[in-house]
Image 1 (cartoon, rainbow, N blue to C red):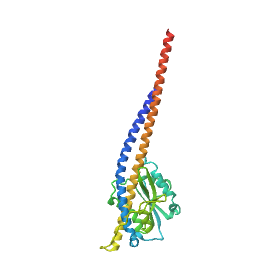
Image 2: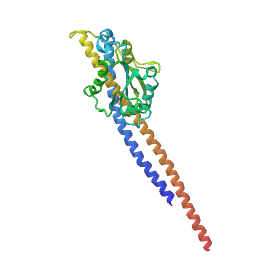
Image 3: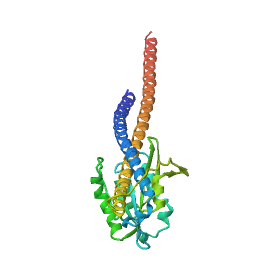
Length: 298
């Protein structure tokens, strides 16, 4: 019965696929928890810095990172994953950038792009855009020291006066099933920029405002403290965006693989039912043929 053999092969193939998707689901869940802890921890630290700086924005605006400029391009930095199989994460981030008013309001010569992640580079290439810089395969063991390789490139354009604004596109991690693509100003530092980062807003709803921290400036000078805090904030905001990207990526991949595993289970049940029906039909047919043959002999 060749058709039964074919169904049996299909069942085996689907079961093998299920083993792979289940393993990927477990791996993604494990890594998601790691980056979830890092994302939440870094977010709390960033909020503390933002709250401290919000009490003395004027000093921050006097640094090179708070300089208002009339000339130069607007630099967009987008973070996506290197790999797929993570639901609509990358598509939503890319769509958020392409459809944003800040992007569409600028002529091509007025904007520039840096891609972090293979998927954003592929999207830019498909759209006919050549990024200023591209970063792929960043270590998942990201630290402030390792982040400097990326941050130095980004800040280089700012320090050379080539850009007047830097905008960061990244996901805001909420829970394993929910994230929100965000588009925020990275530089220059302004009161609005600090407020937007410190109190995340999504879909018109405000997040909880962190409690105010008393800050007193002593030695060294107030200017040196402000500059040191500004650099620390730049590094922290990038690390926060990176960790939230990774937490969202693995959350999305875990959910995608969970759905794939459930679909494989359903397919195995359906194929098994078809196999049993076909086998029962074949047995019934054979019994009928045997009965008919014995009656003919008699």
